[in-house]
Amino acid sequence: MTKISFQALPMSQFTTLQKKVFPAYFRLQTVLILTTLATYPPMSLLSLFTPKASGARQWGDVAAFGLMLLNASLNLTLYGPKTMSAMIERTHQETRDGRKYNDKANMSDDMKRANKSFSRMHAMSIHLNLIAVLSTVWYGLSLASRLEIKS
Image (cartoon, rainbow, N blue to C red; front, side, top):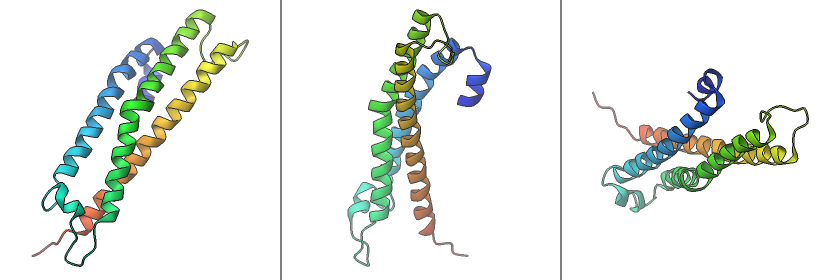
């Protein structure tokens, strides 16, 4: 969605869309992780820390949920808002300079700083989201491996 929106919309509309979509996405991501954690089989969250019959705990699942929650929380509270602020600052800098953020000719030092700040925050947000998604897949595979199909 982001790539298509970036290509299809004027920058001001794209920025407005991003300001609305990503905070909602990060909130929903966090709520869904907490919901998944609350419904951990067989007895919700308590089962995650209770030893199995073999005496082992589900440390792989604990790690997956820890990564999911950590990364989603960081995006929700830190990197998502910082990325948005950097994007807005870069837009304001475009207005002050009278040039687009990607106009390399005579780029001001302030625009270089704004671009660098945005790039850094955006990269962190993307990587945190990727780690959260991979952790979710990890947990999904772990959950699927415990299914017993009886005919």
